[in-house]
Image 1 (cartoon, chains in turn orange, red):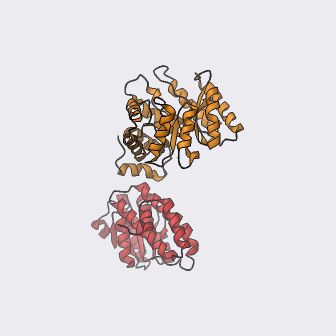
Image 2 (cartoon, one colour):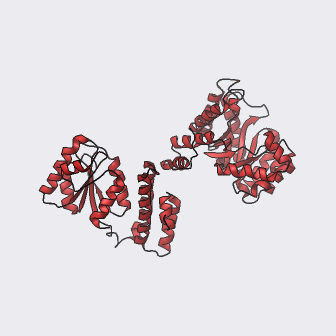
Image 3 (tube, chains in turn yellow, cyan):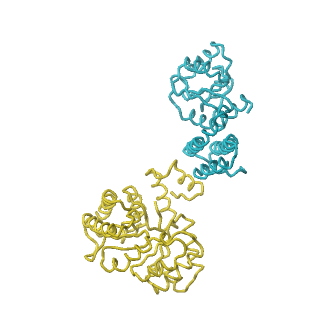
Length: 265
Length: 207
């Protein structure tokens, strides 16, 4: 499974601080540690800082120490544009996080996706908000797929995020999400992605819930996850679930991780 | 430590690197047999790591698959030289026993070390052993057994081989086997691990 490292997000107070302080060493340390832990992508978010200017700084600072592709995380077209312009190397590897069927997002972000032919995360939300049912989320997915197909976009680069809602609000929110994953994989030639922490909002032992949620998502066809690769237990869950799902030929990755002492019970 | 990058890639189970380097060396004019030998050195290391507990069974199987993939590339270039294995060994699990894991592991290592291995499968009657040995004239036969109740079958098979006038060396393998069992059934060697089996083969074939 594709791992998008979530640490460099300005929603985290300590990260917001190091971005505001322009503490390059601290940012680069977080970047390097996530890569070493197995991140395939590094998510960059500066929404809680001086978004556009700081995105430029963050991209440049991170790329000084790693070649791992970046995931530009913003709702603002201007910030994504600045990020893309700043990225050196193959810009078509950048994962844009995200578009949706909201009119403003489509207008601002879609042209950038098409210009650079980047992979992109598509949220199942439109101007009416996040739908309550799996059926309505599939409908939005269909609209997104149609919109991108009309523009000759390569759908295998589209990562649909069916938006998980807290279990605390409705005890069937997880099963509804699993249903979305299964249906999307069955109906469309696209990929799926999710964050993990919403599911456990306002519950105790959140990491426990997140970990099992991840494993069940993977079993239902999730292709990528936005998570904290520095959390050894969640990475252990990824490695183990990949082994069980037949994604790890001869268990090579699992056994390698075992020998490196990366697996935690 | 392995010095050659191809042996090392084999030992590290880096499949893509192995196949790439095999093609590269072939293209660069390296003798196919020399490449096989280099791969075998990596295979021996895999066997050692399995023996020491560092590698697990699935990695041993993967090594076999990588070796197979490499041989698929090399075989067309080995024509004329293809007879140049270290020798033929016949192996089977004796009558009454259907365990094949240990047998398959030792076969993988023997093939990786350059032997031509004839695998008779499991639950093999003594006549079949004799027939295969007469046909191949293999100097070494291996019998695998896990069930203690099959000791007599092993003894009878060895008697049948001797009775047919064959002086084939006999090695028996299985985790409960020891000197006493070896003497009781009339075998020449015994092994309780796959790598011990390979050592005996080296001794018999002087390889």
